Image 1 (cartoon, rainbow, N blue to C red):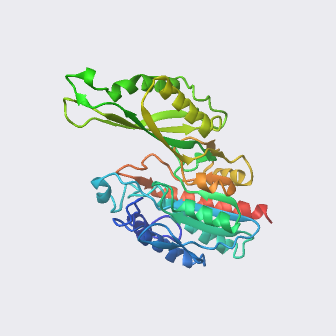
Image 2: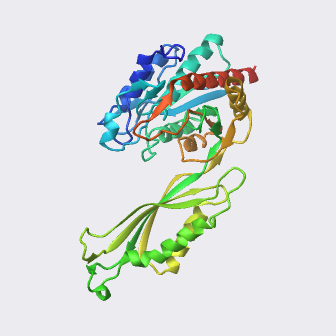
Image 3: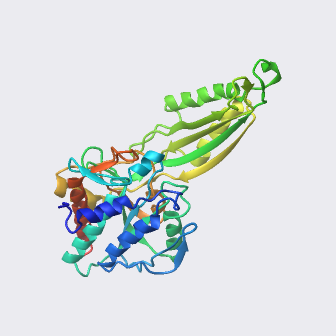
Length: 391
């Protein structure tokens, strides 16, 4: 039998099998996954109701009116998966071996959803009439452009004046054991698409052309040097120093005897609270301008840095982890970004707690089956402690 109370092996297999791919709803049904958990939630009277919100074509998903009370908790998970090619589709089938569950989303983040559903079920059995409102926000778009999904829900809640006091996000945050690390903040993320213009020509006549790769090379070296020296900023007690990284570099026609007419460089800055969007943009432009480049640069701000200071939620999660595992958990803001950056705009206390992240986004994504029960108990104990704090 599957070890998590009240969730059998077949049910979890079905939840993991119903993968959801950002930006590819026609390939694998995000809606089917959400409907699967909707049926489960209906059993504990967590209903999906309220006005409809269009979350991209061709689907329309309902946005719940949460009817929050004075003290509220929100649980956030995404049903997203990352498209990694044909091997991804072959891994959609689940399998159990070596006491592990294999499948896309096994730890990022479908088992987090399953663990919290059971945690709510167990919590409501012990406390049939809690003094808090509970809501599950299960969306798909976190790995995509970040336009629909959580962003749309947060905007709708803000427009309605609804307040969230606490939010737990099921991101896979653990390093070696479930509970050894939780995220109480994230760095900001900002991307740039830089196009350096040149003049295309025959490679044997460089004096009649202008090579944009050669032109950009000194500026690239300077930007990398700033990065290597930790010169963007030094970070602080809660955040790592800001980092600048190139993700893609495209140039050339494919022919071996043609100087390209342009070079397109995609880069990203993960930045701490010691820097601002404006200061980082100004610094990048200053380097490019100093090398007299002919360029265009389009910026995309993916999210601003945020930090949840120790308070009711942090202490409740810490205590729940210690009680369940004996671990003194580490607070961290490391790693990538998550939907918590959107929730933080309407909720002052946001914490990310989830399974071990070692296999996320890999072909053989998997999770130790026993750790799912551990995670469920951490969520349940957190709810119990928050409920008691309001008594």
